[in-house]
Length: 496
Image (cartoon, rainbow, N blue to C red; front, side, top):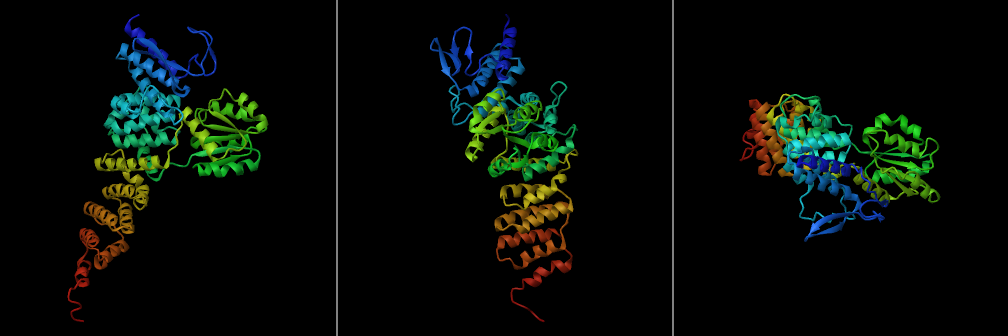
């Protein structure tokens, strides 16, 4: 065979490994070159020192490692095989997402770069190609890796590139998954394409949502006994979920439409009457939005083995005895998310996203692109500018200073006047001065009076000077301007 046809075969094999379309299954006797081998511990064969050496690897990443090896071989044989490079990037992301303290990669040591390095190096085309495929696969976690890289590297209209008849970034912008939508808005905000594209009007409002943080994920509890719901609800709330409880599968089905986009965990009582657990899991598997949602089935010790046997073909399901405590439940959900490609933003991730959103809105405001009305995020910008997170507040203040709407300048003034630390107040007042000089005064009489109060009475020189610069930029009428001189007579009151 030619190198090109051999490359195609290696690529096909890589796809089979990536999608787990393989005869090699954990714990199942294998047939082939070596008879009677149980695949309890998979091996990857390496050529070292002139001989074959077998390297045991964890099942959790075996398929990804093999997909990476086969894709790489396809690229060695045919460097023009773009799909092989995309698949290698996807497999590397999935491999990394599955790593943990318990799951380590013996083939790629700590010096091996993280998947973001390869995505950013590959560039916009391959990130969009990977995004296109992972959206089709409903693989949220890997899709988010592609979007994070696009936020860093995509520039201008390149991010709008079509893949066949599909436009991946627009598909992501309209994804039913909240995090995918928010990250696609971040990528578009940072790349700032000037061309018009479908649903461009969603970008700024979504960036505003990123500023205030994603909505809480929903955990659905389906249990006929209220005691089970009462036991598990505090644990789920402590883990950051909003709990939606239902006493039957039918009640859950009736509420599905509104909740479905936010559902990130499902807990089911194995003792549910018909339609029972099997029917609920079966319905979820038929729904693209729910088929990969981590699901925990609670059962009694006497039916534990029965439940595990009944649900053994459902990879999204973990069966536990009784109502799980916090440690067990968190462990099961984290493991299932890793295996299923789900993602929930941690508080640290949400904050990092908010900073990116503020800076992205700043880019859009500075470029004054007509497709993006940054003022539509004004309420969120004002809220965050007055918030406790100083870095986020200052970034939002910088955006507000570029916008001309009266209520936004007033929001910036309120944020500046409300800061507790003098240095922060001084920096915010400098932004307010910039806004006033650019757009004129939109301040209320009360805000002007507060600024004058700082000028007249503040003893800290730097703060007094910062407020004076704002008051000066307001270009107040003479009767207001002369007040400062009358208030600051050095030799006391002269005359009546």
